[in-house]
Amino acid sequence: MKTKTGFGIGFFASVLFLLTLIPFGPTNPGLKVGDIAPDFQLKSTTGKMVTLKDYKNVKGYIVVFTCNTCPYAQAYEQRIIDLHNKMAPMGWPVVAIMPNDPSVQPGDGFDKMVERAKEKNYPFEYLLDDGQKVFPAYGAVRTPHVFLLDKDRKVRYIGGVDDNSEDETLITRRYVEEAIAAVEKGIEPNPNLTKTVGCMIKVKK
Amino acid sequence: MRKLMVLATLMLVFSMGKAQKIYESFDDFAPLLAQTQNDTTYVINFWATWCAPCVKELPYFEKLHQAMAAQKIKVILVSLDFRKDLESKLKPFLEQRQISASVAALVDSRQGQWIDKIDPSWSGAVPATLVYRGTQRQFKEGEFENFEDLQQFVLHFFDPKN
Image 1 (cartoon, each protein chain N blue to C red):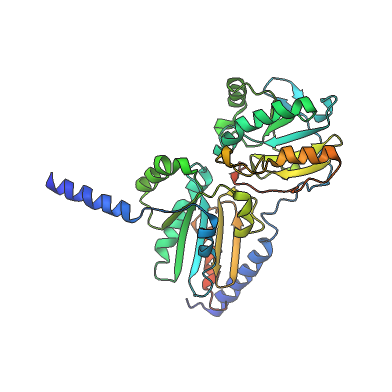
Image 2: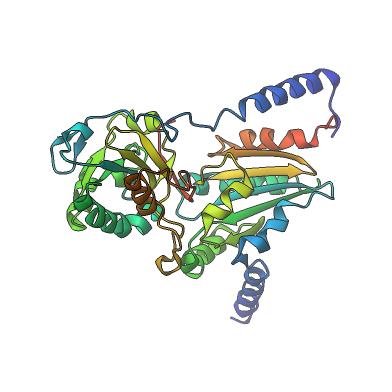
């Protein structure tokens, strides 16, 4: 492909510009393991406003960014319910936050969240990130995306629930449960960061 | 009626000819990311039928595939649909859309082990696109705004200065 010099330089410059953007563009700053996570006040499907400091006698929080519509969130829905039922009595409740903009993803509107929570009997709070301020502060990018916080809201683990999204029978690592066990023993979770496929959080353009 | 039968048969052959390759294991898929010994530009898009922004940008990739057919370029649309959905969702989707670019399905569910191998900066959210030629690579998480956005992302691999 031949280009005239003028165009070539402009093109080259724009490529250079793009190259400088790319390493930083998609990287969401957000929280890292060891950071203190901000508290929030968000509306729950139960109708009340929820903040982390309202939780009494907890050892930490399993903050999960999830939603109604993402198939990966759906694949993990029962596992997140089970996780809460197992861990909440030990002081580690699930706090679920729906980060999508309902105007972009109508299936994630607050009414639909209420329906879903009722239908599936969510034993945990399911909160709407109204105004979409919380998910960027945490650095959540996909659903589902777990942030495990200790009682001081210090981030101890970020990532997936376990190592097999599609087939529960093939799970070899239950990352969140393992991370909680590590924190309780006073040691650093290993791994403290994992990746899974998920749906990008929906924001208005 | 007979004509219809011939047409139906042709269409069947046509759709079978484009049946997507299914990768059960990332290890089998990995060579697609490492064709560095030739001068073909590989445009590898990770998507799924359930991902609305992915589906929205598929036509841009299709257009790229057609617009740059004369160039040494290979567009591969890698579906991350669940294995259980390949027959029931992916196949009808592809038949309906008449996709002409190559389609593969990567169903290795141990994603934590391969996301970083596609690109260390990738969080795992789809859509995501990797373009490479030789050792030159560029990765983007998130969708392209429009065809021109994608074209610009790919075109500099064809800049004579590179």
